[in-house]
Length: 120
Image: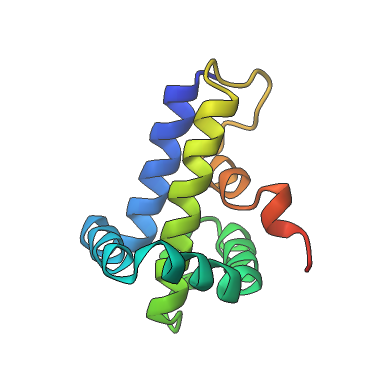
């Protein structure tokens, strides 16, 4: 599967979960927080993001997994997605053969990289 196709499918999952406006709001708050604040948020919410991603996957990508998620957790999820998506695109610019084409599986693979899943 080509990298662009993986990228597009994962973006659609994020938009389906959080919405275009929700993503834009999270990005706006990230700019206000600055780099240090964003790093701190990602570290603080690391395990919560992993739990939420697994819940979303278990529910087949349903946005019903998000109610009750704090704004900080949603913001951290958007930050991680953007960071990991950039890393993915640089690491696999040509895409990946024999990858599960399910959009939620692609998104989850992007959301939980080995460095995100490693306990401290």
